[in-house]
Length: 460
Ligand SMILES: [Zn+2]
Image 1: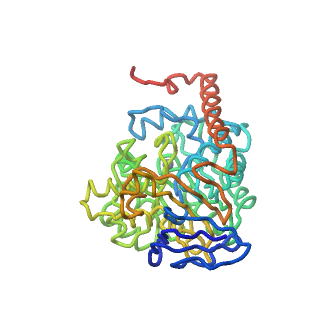
Image 2: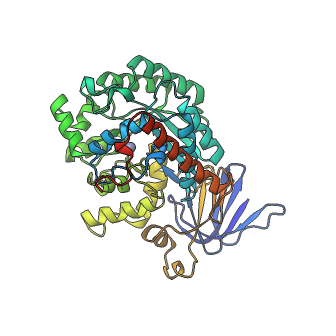
Image 3: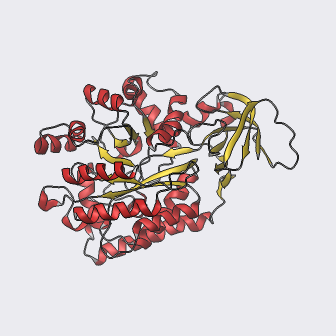
């Protein structure tokens, strides 16, 4: 396949104002300027008026939360979690499959080609939740990096979550090892890789954190958790462990190039140095941090010091309908509002959402830039609309403006989105699966007596 007459922003290497991409199998064979060669029998896509970028990589999400959007609208993280844990305790595999189908479709429709997911609640007797979301990712056609999450520190042991949503340490470790054995595909073209991901320092014990790191390193998979998201968390860590969140994780053996943390909003100067020195990545989730009033991560300083930063939408219960591509704009504006107009450029924002994300997932050799030999995960943005064409620089149009329409999204050369429509599934039906998941979760939660948290307009 050839995509021709297109502006190419490869993220690594020089931009091409008018050129072409040639794809062979699931890989990029050639990226070059000028007219494409005449190759008989090779399908051609005319990219006139389009910008080609690497497909976007989402490095933090909780897909099940599609079913609990719009609740606890004015709460802090801890208030929001306490309101929602009991609702989430009612979920089953049917809820997860519907929520993940809608959530992953929504991601594809904003240029995402690879997504991680952090699933950390596994209520007993409610079906195989991990298998349900993996099936949804296969149907939508995205590369998927599910992180087998976990919580073992319930309220009775000094944690934040109620005991009903936590699991026993031994059960967690055996289920996580089984998930890696069942699903991990380490190949170059892999569509499915598994990470190990205890939820947070206030919901996972020190033993679970330590044992998870040992397990992940034995299995050769990556480690993920939430870290330094709010000042409440910092206070919790100081009180319980006498350490800042990052120093606590350092003590537990959790810093290194195989680890990425979600958020890292509240970092000291020394924390930033430790992340950079150890090659530990972070997933920046600006909309979620803004929604929960958590603060904003020092992304420009992290980048200046050489730390890796990717982008994440975070779960939809704290980011609602946030499109992944829109997070580039959020990142750029929040950094500039805090640090000034040169804090983050449009091209740096694009790099966060592509190569930065690929590094977080350990896939920088395969994904994140448009280069020969890499996988053909490509987003083709239409930047020649009657209004958007007035912006001279297409990367500026993509990052500074509202998300432009997608002419095409390719995953390994396979079309997932064409002219703004999902091609792998019936798009409206994928959306309705999310609505059904929401209704089902609400009903299941109400049957268990948790009506307060599912009020539509709390406080009114
Ligand atoms: Zn999260």
